[in-house]
Amino acid sequence: MELSDCLTFAGEHPICYLATEDGDQPRVRPLLLWFADTRGFYFMTMSPKQFSAQLHRNPKVEVCFYNGSGELPEAKMMRLTGAVEFVDDAELVKKVSEERAALEGIIGRPLEPIAEVFRLRRGALLDAHGHPQGARAGDAQVLNPSVPVHLRCSRRAHRHAAQSVEKNGAWG
Image (tube, rainbow, N blue to C red; front, side, top):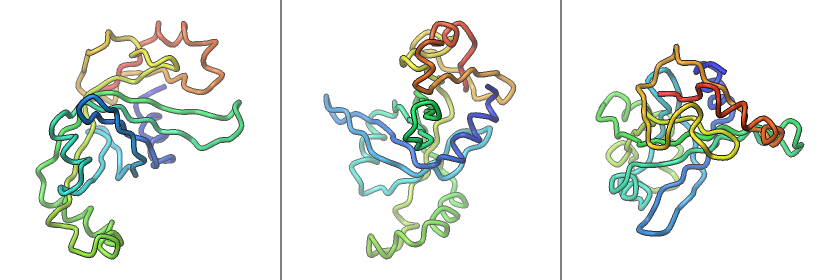
């Protein structure tokens, strides 16, 4: 699978689950992908949230995108692991604040002053067993659209896991 396939999968299934750590306690929450391109997978949060504080303290995360299928043969997921980076770009903050303006009615205040954009730009694509594909744990490479990745993340993939690990699956 090419990087473009991973970007497409994430774009088609933008509700994902992102895991952080809070001391010695893992924290997982659903999150809406803002967009994904060759520069990374982009998200937003708000600075007053504990989620933001967790990301600033420890930027290492794991993200799981799932296609939502209730039928095992069609069930697919994509797991990415790496470190997020906050993007200091006033235009992106303004754009996400405009696109997510409905949040202002929920939080009761303007979004732009507290919106934070972050992205996962470096990391690894994980196989069905959670092993980085084609890389040792901890390896990180620059996100590169020409790097082929092999994604075997459906329940059926367990029988193909050995093949998956042998292929280059690092993204980024």
